[in-house]
Length: 70
Image 1: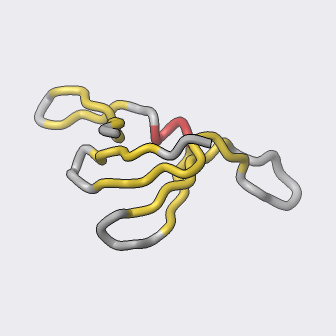
Image 2 (image 1 turned 45 degrees about the horizontal axis):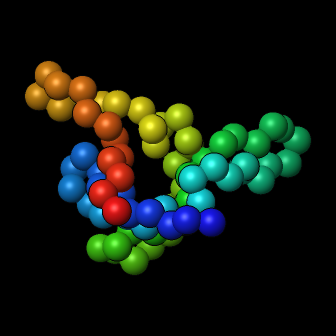
């Protein structure tokens, strides 16, 4: 498993531990999620994979929500 550092379009840095996990659920199909750690807040997070890799509009320009930096 390769860990990588990503920058959020708003500036935060995140260590991505697992970039394609399956959410555990009861009675429904699990979603693909990314498991990552906030370097600033020192907290763990998950985000739906399709949101993690999507582009967002900032000042009329599409930019990646998260961009790999290391």
